[in-house]
View 1 (cartoon, rainbow, N blue to C red):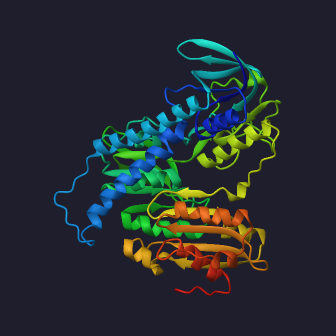
View 2: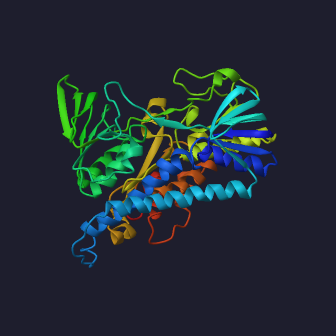
View 3: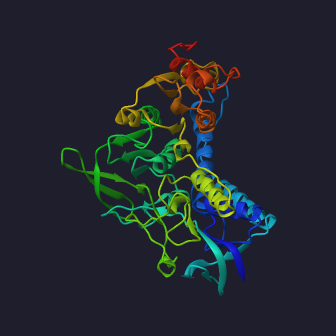
Length: 464
């Protein structure tokens, strides 16, 4: 069989690339080695984690907030099995939806491990082995959880995010190695259900890649949920003793300290996954971190072979991979698309949610950029008080001279959705005053964006 374009990997980058290629008239094949489409995001990442986050938040509100709302519940209990089953149902419906989209767009789905024989020949090793010819290839094989020396994941007591999505019991004490997005989200799930959660972090803050204000605010909220944080700790080892796990670390004073819990979640980031691709046969180069090297058009050193998503440099985000999938398809079609990597938002789906786009305050200081700050607390909003979601703030960074918005950073209710307003504004190079002069419905959480913009515009917030 001969194809115009073959995509290896069916995660958000891969399947979206396949759809766009088909829309543009390319005869398209999508290769996936697992039984279901959707990659990490749909199967063991974004979608299942959000399902559990929502379920656990319902329980937490029932246990702690319903009484204040005038709702009395007797004998409240967690049915973890049902919670996991609902999550699995959400995953199945979502993955089935990708199957439908492939059929709708007449994309051939080939099940098995795709590997290069040469730049234009791909072998698919599945239940049967087959070979296809292709003019162009998009590598979209994603990433896998990273590990650290001295910590061997056994998938029983020392686990990754994959195992944390299918727990048989609520941990009594969950130790999380790493204070990044994935660990905090999954830690939130089990903290809400009653687990003690300890976070051991190598740096001096959680979510270290985001604006420093957000890390401090989230830390306050998670402490109220029962989190304990140990910063500037370098983990040396983790050992499974049967019913418990002991994690040993070195603190900033050089002292060796130990932590004991019944589960340890290793959440220290992710690494590009290229196993089995046989890139050498096609002559594709990788960088020192095992990522596929690409140019400004996401083409590798081999003409006609492209790579997108977690397997290349940049933020490991599903929506970044999707943008790159569309970008490559359109480049191959002779169009001139663009991606502004500075305006790809980052989100943490804890509660309160965290979101940011553009430059952080730390980055502006380091660059010597003169800027002004407008900030507005969620607790000053009538909508936030009505829903009892008063933690958090919206912070807008604008150029001191031109008032152009350089960065927007939020923590609070539904900011994962609110950040889109900032992305739109910044894509069109809006000033803080532009946002301040737009009408925002009352009462809404979005009013905090307007008020922060007002605060950045000559410090004239109306409700603070």
